[in-house]
Length: 212
Image (cartoon, rainbow, N blue to C red; front, side):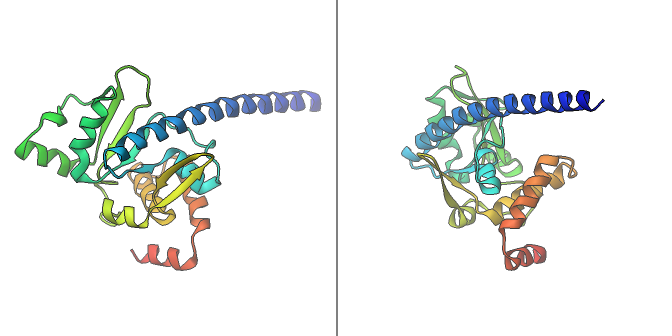
């Protein structure tokens, strides 16, 4: 019986190793995508903050290989939305929604940007990772910072030879809590990230959060 259990545990260990290898390679690929896309936006004078994915992985575990994302979440200033869409269109990106945000004008344009907070883009040539472009962190929580405040508090993360701008630890914690609450706290990964982020904050920071 013990031999059977040990054999089973060994198989689990080997399976986890294989999963980690795949995750590691995918994250290296995605880091290069992040570098490419953020450089494109910055070269066009569009400030950008990386959300979730590699940024949260680094803030919580000081590793970029512990969290896999199927797309890239970017936070930009609301005034730069249409400029960013135009720039990314030149690199094969199209809006996934049936609603044509790029061509909206007047009231429809203001309506969409006011009542939503992101737009999803896919690369038609499948050569680059899909993007969720945010101009607000959420529409459900008023205590989350707007772009200008988030930018002021943001930090530069250095991963090997790649630099990316992330939300601060405290703003990242607020962001994850807001989305976890929206999902009724059902995502175990988010709960783990909340725990790890909270451990990086001072009691003063946590007290300030509690009073918000």
